[in-house]
Length: 285
Image 1 (cartoon, rainbow, N blue to C red):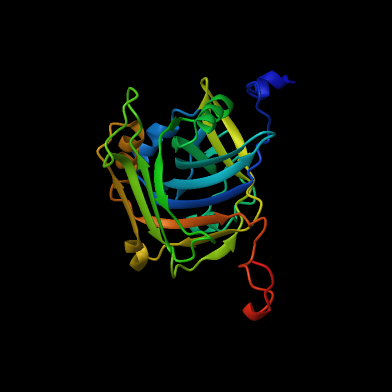
Image 2: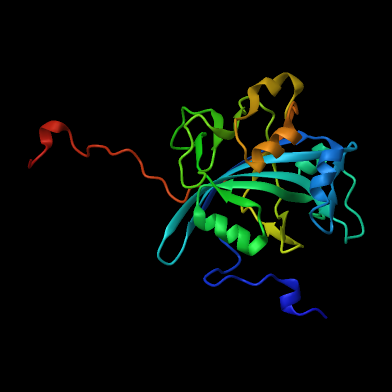
C-alpha cells in the first residue's frame, strides 16, 4: 500500500484543502483543434491521453472570476485557463461519447476532464498556490473584462482581454495583450447540465496531479449552431508569451463549438430604498 506522501503532493504551509470558493462566475468556450499539435501537448502529462470526439481533440478557454474567504481576508481573482480535454490512461477505458453527450454531462464515470496548458491570473497568491499545490502552468498578469452580471443587467456579451504581463518590472504598453475573447450567448439553445465533479490536471515535478472541481449548482450549456458562430471572436495580440503562442497555434481559425456557463447563486439581495411616509408627513430634518 502506498503511503500518503506517495499519493498526495505536500501541502505548502498555510494552505488547506479543499479550497472553498465564496462565489464563482465561469464561462467555457470549446474549439476543435489539430490532432498532432494537441498530442504534443498531452505527451508532457504522464498518464494522460487526449479525449477524442469524432476523431478530433477539443480545447477550451475558461474564464473565471471568483472570491474566497480566509480568517482575516477576502480575495478576488480573475483568470483564464487554456485547456485540452483528456482522460487518464490508467483506467480501463474512457467512455466513447459524442461531444454533445459529454457537454450534457452524460459521462457518468466523470473520466474525461481538462489538462491545463496555460493559466493567466491577476492574483499573485492564487498564482503561487496553483503552482505549489498542483503544478499549474500559471503566471501573473492583469485582465480587462466586461461581462454579464446581476448588478449590470444592461451587459449582454462577454468581452475578456488577457493583458501582456510586466517584463523586468516595466509595465507593458496599454495596447499589448495576449488574447481577447468576445462572446454573445443571446439566443443560444442553453440547457441545464451538470459536469461536476470535473477532473483537472497539471504536472507537478514531473508527475501528473489530478484534482476534482465541484461546482455546487447547475451549469448551463449549449452547442453553437454554425449560423451563430459570428457571435464569438478570438484574437491574439503582439505578445511574446508562451500562452499567446499556444493559443495561436491551437486555436487559429478554429470555430467555437460549444459553451458552458456557471454562475453561483447570490448570497443576499438588498432592495431599493423607499420613503415610508409622504413628504408632507415627514418630521425632523
